[in-house]
Structure formats: C-alpha cells, structure tokens
Image (cartoon, rainbow, N blue to C red):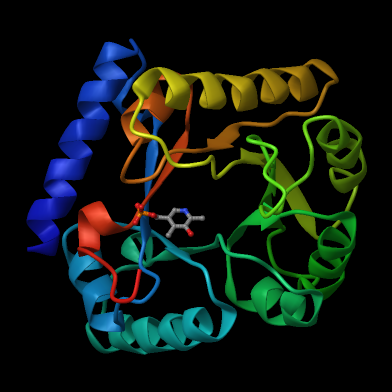
Length: 237
Ligand SMILES: *Cc1c(COP(=O)(O)O)cnc(C)c1O
C-alpha cells in the first residue's frame, strides 16, 4: 500500500519535473508521517523513502527513537537511514528537543526560535538545516515572517553558528485553483531570489503538499511535503 502510493507520488513528481523542464532529481519528496505509526515509516523506508516530516515535538521524538531502534535491529544501511524534518509550529520551550533530534527545521517563524535552536544544537554535530516560514497568504491566523521582514531575518539567521540557512517554506491557504496555487508559490520564489541576490546561498524552497505539489514544482519547489497522498487520510482531520 505505502510502497505503491510512494511510487505513484514519485511518478507524479517526475512528470511535473519533466513539464517544468527540470531534472528529475531536482525535487526531494518529504513524506509527512505525522499521526502515522513508526511501522508506517519503516514500510516507507523499506520502499526507498528517506526524508520524513513531523509536526508535533513529542510525537516526533518518540517516533524517531522507535524508528531508530527498528532500523538498528534490521541492520538498515547508513545511507538508507531516515532524515527527520520538523515542519510544525515550534514553541521556544521545545527548541532544545528539536535541535537534538531533527536534521531539519522548516518552520522557523521568529528570531527567538532561531537563536534557541542554534544555541541548543550540539557543537560537534553538523549544523541544523533550517528554512524560514513565510506567511505568504498574509493570514492573521498563520505563523511565519511577513514577506517584508523575512529578508532582514534571513541575513541575521544566516550568521548563527548552529544553523545552516537553506531556504524558505510556506503553507498557503488551500485552494483547488491551479492558477492561484501557482501565483502564491511564485511569490515565495520571488522572495527566495531576492534573498539570494543579497549573497545568501539558499538552495531550498519547501512548498507544495498533497493537494498542490505539482503547481509548486512548476514554480521551483525543491522539497515537497506530502502526507495523505502517501500514508492515507489522517484521523480527525
Ligand atoms: C500535514 C502537513 C503537510 C502534509 O499535508 P498533506 O495534505 O497530508 O500532504 C505538509 N506540510 C505541513 C506543514 C503539514 O502540517
């Protein structure tokens, strides 16, 4: 089931890359496993999936530990071990755990969180890969930097020793209209290019979910975050 769904999503990604005249390896599939079990993650790993996204700190770190011991028991090779991305809302009192369990954080939405993550990243570990979340649809209820603030924030955050600033992330208001999806993703792309124009070596645009990842790829996404199209419908959502 999961392996077939993964194959199908990977085929759709390849098709969108072809349509966008981008190389097939230009886009990384991030499998969003929130609410799904460690067993589901293991099935996906056995089907060749590497990158996984979690939204909730407690659920995420429990799953990371379960998956790690399962991978050890099954002698999964080092180059197939999962890479964990934190993509959910982040409170500063959880920053320490996130900095010590995850490889990536996509949802930095204020300076204070960035400083905490940098401070808590163990010094001898590789820097934590981070993206800044942009409130691209300017929704009052959504977190994220405004399009205006994110440029200065990127310059400041790029200096933090525990972090490696990789790019930008957005969660637009859901819409079925492809033109609207593309318009929003193109806006994030424009801000990304502006920041690169200031000399920061960003390489990541984290945008697109089950509902709109093809539109995101057409507008330059390098990571698409796909949950339900891989693991099925989430309970209670
Ligand atoms: C849940 C979630 C996703 C995946 O959503 P699907 O619609 O299931 O693909 C992606 N990004 C974030 C930030 C999420 O919270």
